[in-house]
Length: 179
Image (cartoon, rainbow, N blue to C red; front, side, top):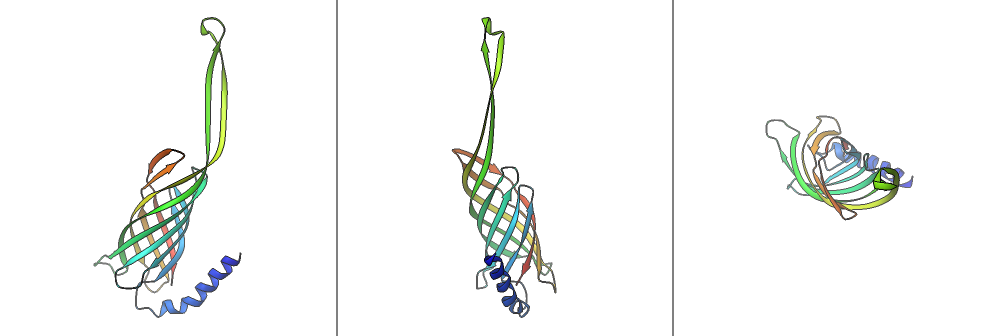
């Protein structure tokens, strides 16, 4: 709860400086809603004119019943025809924890010539630690005269967990309050 109070205080103290800026934004905090994962997104631009930003995602996984922390480094390029629209690409990594279920049934035979059988069922619930690499491509639009940015992105990622690997695709919509 203290973290939430500190975050709100930080937003209130830095909000006046946000309106003094000519255009763009320095930091944005908001929500990311995706097909595979959804959660909190924080993006902060590094100082300078290079249009490089760090983005952190704290997401909840629906299918795998777990969560993930993702850190990305992104390069933003303005789209010249539309003011406030930017294309971005980047890469990063993630670490997560999932509660996986595993069910197995085994058909066992007894009797003569294997004509009689019965089933044995196994069930296992356990936590898996996963880590991997992420790529990201996206578009975001800074709303004029409002402190909000809307964006869409495509984020494929490679993951290693419990000795297995997987390649997944995630697309999402995000809305951030900027200051």
